[in-house]
Length: 217
Ligand SMILES: N[C@@H](CCC(=O)N[C@@H](CS)C(=O)NCC(=O)O)C(=O)O
Image (tube, rainbow, N blue to C red; front, side, top):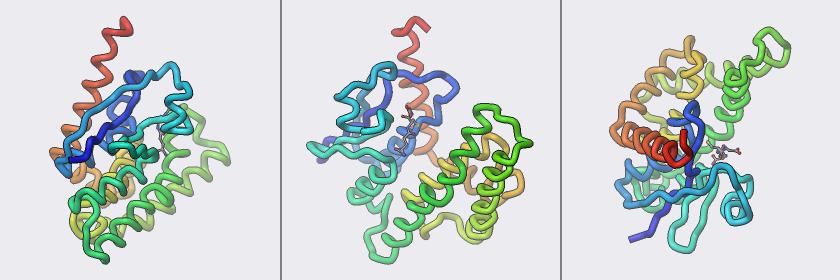
């Protein structure tokens, strides 16, 4: 059996707990019932050892024996090779799940991330820059809405694509950005009601909360 180790920060500020991207990997591992353990790296000191695994000084990364993988999309594709619960093994199902996995990151998150960051930072909404960021996201959601209105999951059965897409959309939802997209909202609610998501989120929150005592927080 593979020796899967999920690497994440030892601590993060409370406001981002439940949203750190290691949750995507935890969720996938739980869905696939793959055994794993979690290792911590310092949040405050991202040295050469960290950069050797994640060149941007970010988390998460996953090790599988002597393989080390960064980028949540790449990690979920790797886990998809270990479990058909994440990426179906038939060619059509594999292609469907893979294209939607990339769409979550490269079409939707590309638009949602600047939008969410702007909300998080409290940037004023009346500027031309804010409008173009808003329009970009709205355009993506306009096209995603009828897709999600017509199916329960993106690629037939639940897959890694749904982990990424719903994780991207739940951040938008948290800032009220799905108000005009009921199918997107329902999809987020369906995905985040799954026991694997609930456990992954609770485990992440407990992991970071445990570090508060050590920091004297
Ligand atoms: N594209 C990367 C993004 C990773 C990422 O943004 N990680 C955040 C935590 S959710 C992080 O490490 N932030 C700290 C930083 O950027 O310095 C992935 O999907 O793995």
